[in-house]
Image (tube, rainbow, N blue to C red; front, side):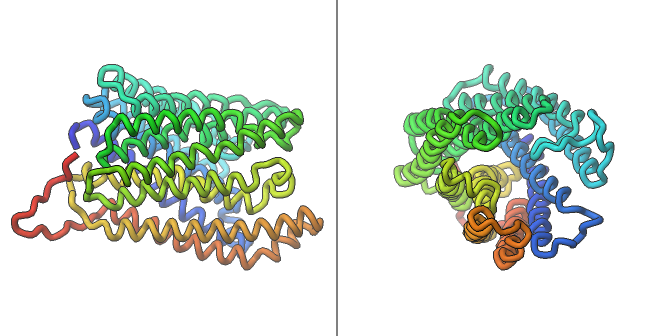
Length: 456
């Protein structure tokens, strides 16, 4: 670690990992409710469990992105963060907002209140006061990192990262507009949800992955930057109009079926480019970096993102197919693997790289960390296949044969049990990861060996 202000990232990563634990445990509970529907039905209904599962996912990923920015921007800009006090203030605001959201959801507080009560919009159910807090925290964050970059060295990595982070914050403003017309509501709603995960988040992913490849492989910066610009151009070209695949059945004009189908098909390209980029950089690299776990997570991120977001997204993105599969377990299969591959794995990769340096505990035992990767990647892959089969059966019985929804759900029980088992394996991997990075065991240093951090 070259700059003292990088330690700000440690606090962000710690809170992010805490919410990661909440998210996976919530997911496991939701998976169990699928096979035992009355479990905790009065104390903690399924809709509340699902809200906690999805919202904690979004919040911890955002905290991970912010922590990543505070860690890598000082090195890229070659100067300390503009203000560490602002960084900690921003984190406090986000934590208070998160606690407010949890209490509001769990106890159903202020129902119907326009300012204090939750909204009925998936992923952006947060009460208005929390959304205002998020905007204030985002403005503090953007000011802090932008000033750091403007006063320091500019690189392609920081430029793309700033573009992605500014886009993330500006697009969130659409969440304040909640029109009474449901079709119009969904159009604006997707401007947040889709243009985040299939737009500006891809820019953040590409820039952080480029930073990791720079550090872990030793490939020349010029080569990495060329790849980065190509990936970003492909992501924006396909992702913006690719929003159309969400407009098929919400009352929008028919031309969206063609726009959505064509540009959604092209969304495979940036994810394939990121996978190719990661493996080519490792192949061309000259550095035998000691942090093998970070390299494993980086390659795993690019690979699983390609399959989850790219291949599984393409499977049901064409409107002729989506007409039958929309809203089935095939959608859940795509969503789970895409989020884990593209963004969860990315955050776990940068945390794996940064934590030993931030905590001054290099070298550390990476075996547990790598074991956690295989547990989580294996569990999520199996879950994806199980949900894909479940969705295929559901599509045929429900959408083609016309059987009743609940009758079909009864016939999917075996798939839901397997999904629950895969979730249990994933949770075990998540706990193992948190333990590995939070409490790393020092390796025994033989006489004559250096115990310092790896040379950059």
